[in-house]
Image 1 (tube, each protein chain N blue to C red):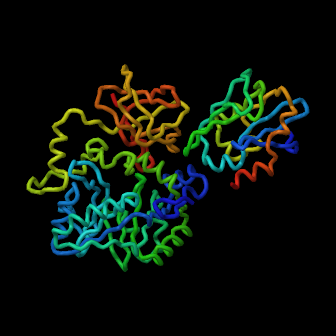
Image 2 (image 1 turned 120 degrees about the horizontal axis):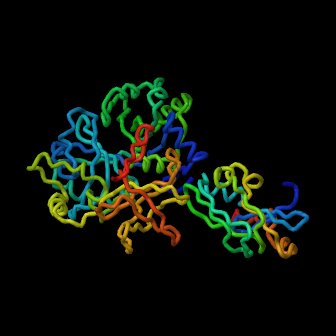
Image 3 (image 1 turned 90 degrees about the horizontal axis):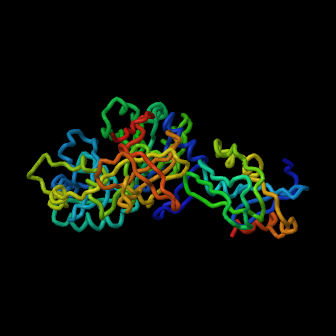
Length: 127
Length: 347
């Protein structure tokens, strides 16, 4: 997975990274994993599920709290990170790389630029 | 850091699960100076404490030994849980921080009729050292706290302004130490240099929950009977002549049939049991029980909880989690002691 392509965010702490084929990889931010603390369970969508922009897509459960994960954009799930089901601590250790949740084929890649830039997202975290 | 009833306290120093394992396998150190320490002196201090709490301090033969007790209101419900120690000139009570205001009000109003003085020791710090390696990290501390390892639980020492007892809130070998602030810093630094790991509130909660220890406001409060929060064993009936607050109501409670009980529950589903989730007994549709505290057990690597349920023959139940019913096994309200699994499934 290329890590130098641009990452965009939702204010609800999800990130998405798009590739040339319009595939969006989705995960939760470093700030989110830090807030949640040790993550112990993850519930992922199924391949083939249609997700809506800002709709519920997954659940993370840490010792501290359960939290819904929203999909940044609308699209069909084409791959999930099954490793997380056995080793959810990967999310704490590598939220932006190995800790990705799922990949979706998005309908309209123009929407990607409507998401928050890293700078805009970081500003929302400081509020 | 989080504001805990006016105290700045750390939730976790790093990973709360690593902190948890540090206590089960090695040694952890906790700053628990938020706990309220009350000293009682005066010619009627024993008379007063015997009336004030449901356990009986007459059982304490040796100075600096302690016992766990409930302090009850007139309805026989729990105002607080505490440890009472016998001291040179009277008694020391360690009560909760969250209940400090109510406790002080209740105690001062009742102390008026006795020859007793109550002094809140907010000049002292309190530190807990917990885990199998606890004695080893204290070897270089001037007061001989490590020698307490040979003693029975709840025994203590008092030397050079350092009060220590073999007790704790984790289910492991360990000590709670009450001492002047500057000595607390020395103790902290010595223990850390010998390998103790600092532990925050989050791991403190998973440790006490695995050990099956109550947390005020979760397992019990001023509407809960000691019989419904696994504290019946702390009520002392030996001396029939002794009166204590709540005694009459407790006798009535014992005769009633609708007392619930505190049990332990576990599930192998990938969810976390949490406080407030409703519990349905098998074959019953309406919820009649509730999770009082729930978490992910780092030792068992599965969800565990304490729950208050109606007494029944059921060996399993269903927790309502996000609209789903998750099957859970009912068992003892204790999961781990000294690093070993002690949870027993109900049969």
